[in-house]
Image (cartoon, rainbow, N blue to C red; front, top):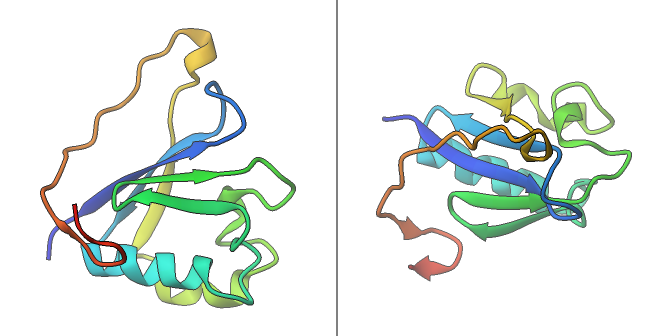
Length: 113
């Protein structure tokens, strides 16, 4: 089992609310995606999977950072200690983008890339 990383970016602008999500494994990332993309999750209309290592979210009152303590906290206990969010620098301030290692993987949701 090795760490798996994915970007999560605000789809409304290119400056704010960007994250790197760190998962204990690729399987944990898939579990997380199934939880947030399936009703009754409040994230079904706010988070979009672009590729296995890239997601977008809409900046609304249900912020991604509320995943562990917000309105949908009953779904989060299995992920405590298995994933976390790291806020990236803001590009509107001229800060750079942290680079995660690309991984050649089959997309478990969409098939091979």
